[in-house]
Image 1 (cartoon, rainbow, N blue to C red):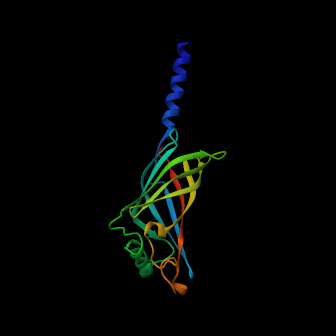
Image 2 (cartoon, rainbow, N blue to C red):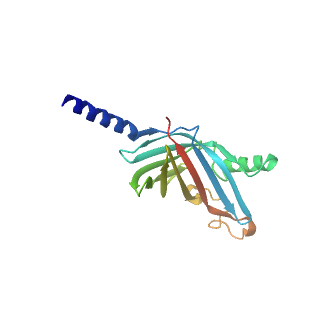
Image 3 (cartoon, rainbow, N blue to C red):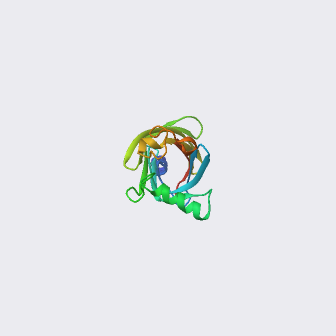
Amino acid sequence: MLKQLIFAFTILFSLSSLANIVVDPTKSVINWKGKKVTGEHVGTVKVKSGNFDLKKQKATVVVDMTSIDVTDLKGEWKGKLMNHLRSDDFFSVDKHKEAKLVLDKMINAGKDKYNVSGKLTIKGKTQPVKFEVVEKSGTYEGELTFDRTKFDVKYKSGKFFENLGDKLIYDDVKLNFKIAAKK
């Protein structure tokens, strides 16, 4: 009987430790894509920290907005776009160094898939989000699309400016992410 009790306690302890997952920022990747009438730009932004509590179905991921990078341009044009994205026209990085995603609901949607919902905070503005996450060998992968204008990023948006022609920048920003757990 004592052996069975110790075995059961060991299993419970190991399962509860798996429920709390700390994010490994060095192995986590977030790629962004923004589109405009004449094309698109892509880049990356780094994860600063995060954790998942699978038992409570909650997660938090903090993004380092100072790390925003443009990967489709080089030289002078890359620098200009990165500086513009960091300016008040876009993400006001000097004032808002972090963005945060807080998930408050993770529903199992099949083998290693979760439908998640929560709140995204950018530039001090918080909005609800929903998307799918797939668990793959210690990583959580998915795609999140958000409307930048809901976070006070209105530069060349057709919702706020008229007659932009080929200067129009679409409102949706796509984030493809791979969040890795520390081992």
